Amino acid sequence: MTEGLRHDWTVAEAREIHDTPLSELLYLAQGVHRRHHDPKQVQLCSLLSIKTGGCPEDCAYCPQSARYEADVEIEALIDVETVLASASEARDAGATRFCMGAAWRDVRSGSQFDSVLDMVRGVNSLGMESCVTLGMINAEQAGALKDAGLTAYNHNIDTSREYYDKIITTRNFDERLETLAHVREAGITVCCGGIIGMGESINDRCAMLVELANLPRHPESVPVNALVPVKGTPLGDREPVEALELVRMVACARVMMPASVVRLSAGRSRLSEEAQMLCFMAGANSIFFGEKLLTTGNPDTDADRRLLEQAGLTAASINAEAETA
Ligand code: SAM
Ligand code: DTB
Ligand code: SF4
Image (cartoon, rainbow, N blue to C red; front, side, top):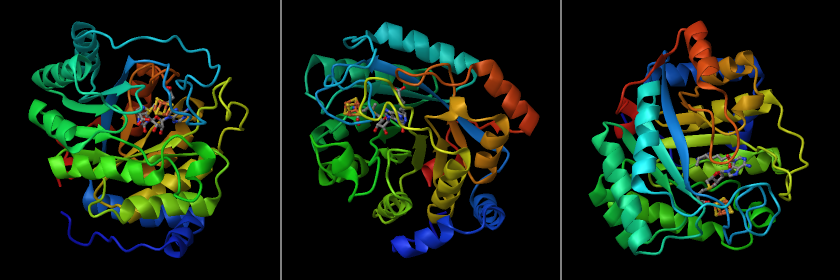
């Protein structure tokens, strides 16, 4: 399934795809999508914040940074039972992957990390795929997560290398790539994407996709987030991106990383059903399912069930072909 995947994209090529007239772009993305995936299936992932707020990093978009005044309640690492109760509820609602996020800069080995390993084992024993996003990790920690049975590690590059320091100054782009390499070497699947709508140029968006597509292996999942502007953060007053910009971004990700699962991630609450449908047509085949992302809202599950039903889409079963490619 990896045959025909390219790792030598240029920003100019990505830009050409991005700027293709929309109906042509959708046609192109649809063709790629159909060759690599079942276009009737959408993966449903549920998200839970296991440690909230008080983060030392200065990511300009993030309500969980301790440096800003977003209205977020700080919460220490929650216990394993609470997490597993939430995972089991998500599974009963139809989710097949459970993603756990912690507002950490990096992971300290010790009792908290051991609890996260227990959460991973617990989620797997529910028959779900497990994903965590814990900030930077070293090779040893990646190995421990692999041994616990972790399916995927989420670690976003967020934007282009050139725009990165306009958004985050407390870590650099190469540190992001190092964690991704540890995840890859440990044999955990990589979930890595970014955010649009932070004031970056279209070329920055294309450069971000080039960075992802030119990794030694494409991330198995690529979350495409639209900035959720949160009051109190430096980006809190930004205008939300136009839906069609998100559609273009999804389509480009689909064309450049044909076998990856492309997740229509944050920002979905503001999208009409029609706009979401265009994203599916552009090649999105995963969503966050459940009423909350980490600290902000997501469409309610009834609305999402209705959307999938109207669109004739079905929830993908576990271990979709592309995830294991
Ligand atoms: N602290 C860890 C880290 O940064 O890697 C994990 C949690 S962090 C909240 C996970 C991702 O959420 C970020 O990389 C970013 O892409 C996304 N995110 C955070 N706030 C967002 C917002 N307001 N809008 C869209 N995406 C956001
Ligand atoms: C990803 O790319 N998006 C998710 C998940 N990975 C961890 C997080 C979105 C967070 C949106 C803002 C919030 O709810 O705090
Ligand atoms: Fe911390 Fe992650 Fe938010 Fe950055 S994105 S402030 S690292 S929780």
